[in-house]
Length: 119
Length: 114
Image (cartoon, rainbow over all chains, first blue to last red; front, side, top):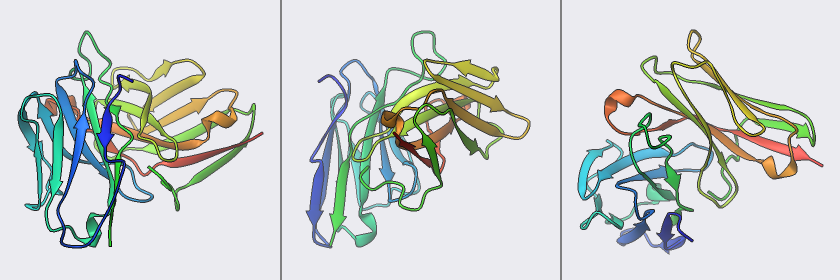
């Protein structure tokens, strides 16, 4: 499978614990995104990388959240001191380039997500 | 994701009918729009996109219509099939941001009865 892969698919943790999610994008995609989705809502943008550079962070990304993409390939999203409000589906997506470019449609390819439940 | 859409607007159709899913967007500066399909337990899947210099685009069994005057987007699915049952999201982007910071709408659940 050459799509976006995320690990783990499910994580149950106790409040106050740290969790880390991993995303492996499609190999030729230089752009990587993290989104969060809660029940009944559409995905909300968290952060964006172009290669290894983190270029944009949402105000939703509190200081307990940190994302990295050290070599411009896979990315990790860590949540420290988890709270019950962090319970959500964390989605990773990747793309080759900007919407409207000559070689792509601007499509974001999403992974299956990592579901976090904080007890 | 799983159990997405517990309280979403729902459109129920019979197999073979045509479906129309509507979306109102808020940012008049948005110039690129995408429809995504999300099945239970899965990530969103691209269906079709449209740029603001167009008002209609057709794909296989799907058509997207864009009305910039009233900031309205619709997705038409022809000959709807049970496999089309899912939650559908519209998403908008302003290419002047320099990247695809897609802003997603609330979503509509489509239920197709055989």
